[in-house]
Image (tube, rainbow, N blue to C red):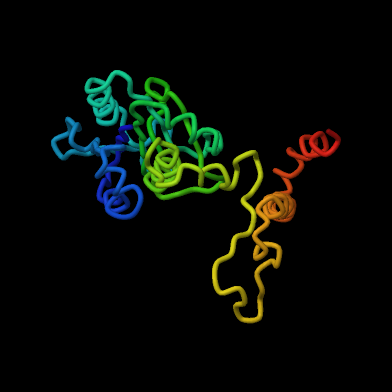
Amino acid sequence: MKFSFVSLFPELLCSYFDASILYRAIEKSLISIDYVNPRDFSIDKHKRVDDYMIGGGAGLLMMAQPLNDALTHVNFKNKATHFIFLSPVGKKFKQNDAKRLAKKEHLCFVCGRYEGVDERVIETWADEIFSIGDFILTGGEVASLCLADAISRNVNGVLGNIKSLDIESFENEILEAPSFTKPNIFQGLEVVSEFLKGNHANIRTLKKTMALCKTRYFRPDLYQKIMPKTKETHEK
């Protein structure tokens, strides 16, 4: 799996891959990373990449030419590239998207800046447009890192224990059950006693119940979606 980041500020991205799980994944050649700066493709003598919007409007916009030429360069190197733009107008990125995109050969994240990107570039190149939430960021770099991290975890071999994916939040549309570690009592708060008895069947049942309760409390929107499935299971 290869990730390319098209960004005016690649230095904001580099350090994220210098430690922990993703660093080890790169060391094992499970994923690879490269960066493309649209400024390197600007034909302006001052290497400008932004300009005022036609028709007026506050702020500046990323110009079509440098960004288009940068994406052409990426596509020329790998025709299988899947181009992803980060924008508040995009659909919400979800765990199922992470799992699906982990099967791609090459993902290219286009990180907008200023007031965004000339719409003609999006129309020409975007395979998908994603948002990480209903809020505005200074640029697309942070959002692209969120996606790359989530997708990488689903690439075979990146996680040491692949089974850990099965119990994470948003698998089967519910949140992960509460978890605990030693000591059994911390500041007067005790671990659920059933967890200490070693009956794994009971523990699994309890964790499922706790996961449903947690989802109902923290994410009632998800709970409403899974209620019919839960009723069907109990009825069977």
